[in-house]
Amino acid sequence: MPQEAGRQYKQMLENYLHSKGEEDLYLGQQFSRSFIEKNIAPEDVISIHKTSIEELIKDMPADVSVSFDFLIEMMIHYGLALKEHQSLIRKQEVIQTEMDIAVRVQSTLLQTTTPMLEGLDIGWISKPSKQMNGDYVYFLKETEQEVCLAVADIIGKGMSAAMHMSMVKFGMDSLRYEKRSPFEVLSFINKMVEQSIADSMFISMFYGKYDTENSVFRYSSAGHEPALFYRASEDSYSLLESKGLLLGVQAEAVYEERTVRLEENDFIAIMTDGVTETRTDKGFIEMDVIENLLHEVRSESAQAMVDYLFNELSKMQNYELHDDFTLVILKKTK
Image (tube, rainbow, N blue to C red; front, top):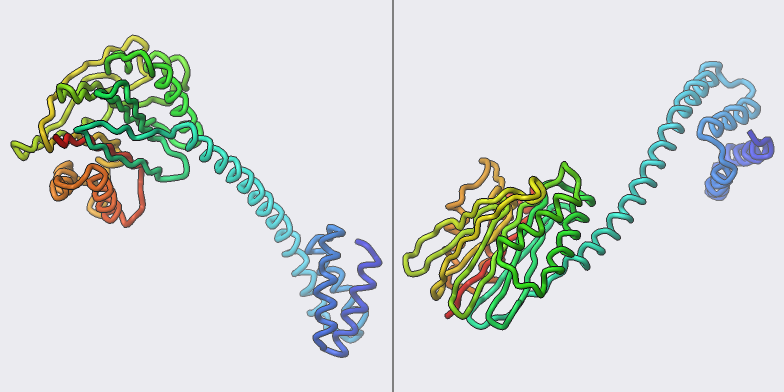
């Protein structure tokens, strides 16, 4: 313990005991910085105070002196706990800084542009429940008459899952000019995923291609949520299901491809389980809740429908997402 610090502290304490003035109190507060600079522990500060006050007050009761010993012991453990707490805070700050960088990198890597096609209205949203998004939306306008889209969901959370999704995006980009069928795209991505990502991670994906010339939507699914199809002329819903294993499970997995023809005002809603497994106080919602909400705004634009469903389902969850929320709507306008 630095003796000079002890002498200076004793002098300031003596001055304050006599004056009880604000100026002496202020000097003491400023002097406390020197304890930090000299790396004096909290229990040593108490010890300095005890020694000083015993020298200044000759007839101090013994119990008062002993009470300082009690306080010193407390401060020893307090100092250790404080150092541990400060260390954790520093580690959390480093992790948060790395996370912020990863979020910005992911946002840049996974960005996509909504294509414009005559006769087709597209709306979409993808909101992460935490900082990193485990969902992915990809658009590709192959020709003036064709648009492709992928909606994927990685089974896993955090930075690692998000970075794996970025790898899938690069795989999709490598197919940009090859004009493959949906089942061929899933087969290619599946082989890449099976070879590249951890065994504990799998990805579900729905991939579709819409041709405005003949109004046909071709689609395949790798263990993803079925898309919801609304037939305006019949005012009815059906599910667009297609058989196929999750990406990364089996290198030679085969993916089924199906088609559906769209008529005016028909729409297809492709979503992740963050939509279908919305949780309320009463439990998970049923699909008819989603159907009814979309039915209320079926005459609106595709983006207005997406925004409405997101807002209504968020409200049901008290505006707290339990999982990443991704929804894409393709609506035939003419």
